[in-house]
Length: 105
Image 1 (cartoon, rainbow, N blue to C red):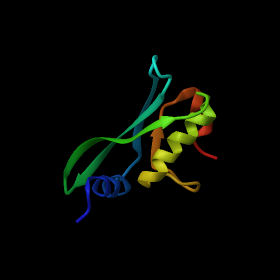
Image 2 (cartoon, one colour; image 1 turned 30 degrees about the horizontal axis):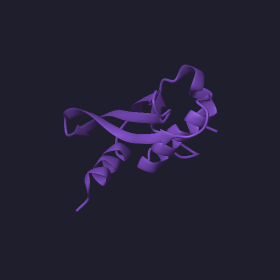
Image 3 (spheres, rainbow, N blue to C red; image 1 turned 60 degrees about the vertical axis):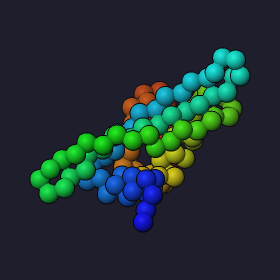
């Protein structure tokens, strides 16, 4: 029986359209530890019923600088781990403006 991660992974991969994502990063003032959180939003269609989903798909500590290239690599790693992005295609739609150029090769 699949666990929660595998269930959401299969649901995300079966999403009929693009998957919207949101990311936020912050640094803890006292320790200077940096974290990146990523959520995914998608619609699952069962018959004629549409069901909206929202899940945290990644929470990572971040090493290195906060450049678009570095953060883009972490973001792509999270999406690749869940199975919604690779070098040939992506189901991901993300609004990063400045960082967009670093998401896909």
